[in-house]
Length: 116
Image 1: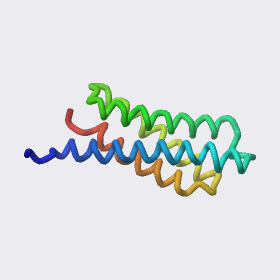
Image 2: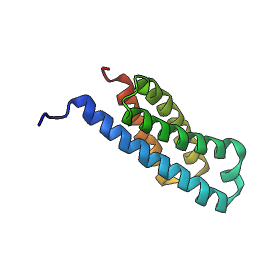
Image 3: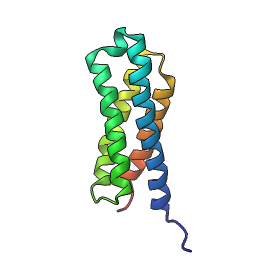
Image 4: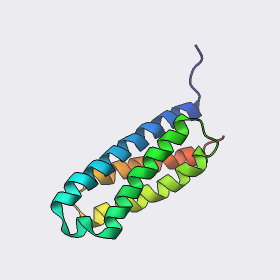
């Protein structure tokens, strides 16, 4: 059985980070933010959280299907995750979401710059 390559390891880690971030953002938005109200449900913040959950799910799907576009999508995913992490940190009370977004952004940056 052949050993996974460095890029395959990076991709597996990225798929896991994207899937985790999707779950955390969606759960945080639909539960914590909706229940807390105020700044947590302002349109710009809530939209960003939903966009982040969606791009993370899509990024994982592209990688799982070995899409030729997955590296480019990872670059966009990293940008959205960084924006979401910053916004969640600014509003406060969403440390798990901040952590998941930062980890996903870091993993996506590695995938975006990996050799195709």
